[in-house]
Length: 152
Image (cartoon, rainbow, N blue to C red; front, side):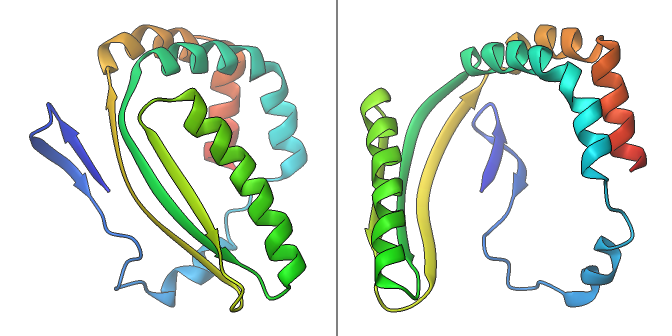
């Protein structure tokens, strides 16, 4: 994954899966858990604000390339067939609604496997997104949600 500014200046670059993953981080994850009930109470009044923000966010994105291939399999043949059918139905919807999307999936009946390969290119106009982002952050309920997420 690469994040570029003006299609030339590299801001962030990462390769999945990472080769140098450490097991030291497992102990740190248990210390900061967010209570789901508290999170739901804070998020409930914010849904309308996030809906407006997502509408304006979709207008700021231009997808120039969306090519992905999924190899999916489970231990049970019946479960593999059932879930690959769900995946195919979702891919048909995405492929038919967007002209630059070329998504595909294939089943694997040789045990549990999830392999994803792809190349995606998105252009995001951040200047058009600044107004809706400021409008979103100016809402009191959204600021409470952010504080709740930060404080745990």
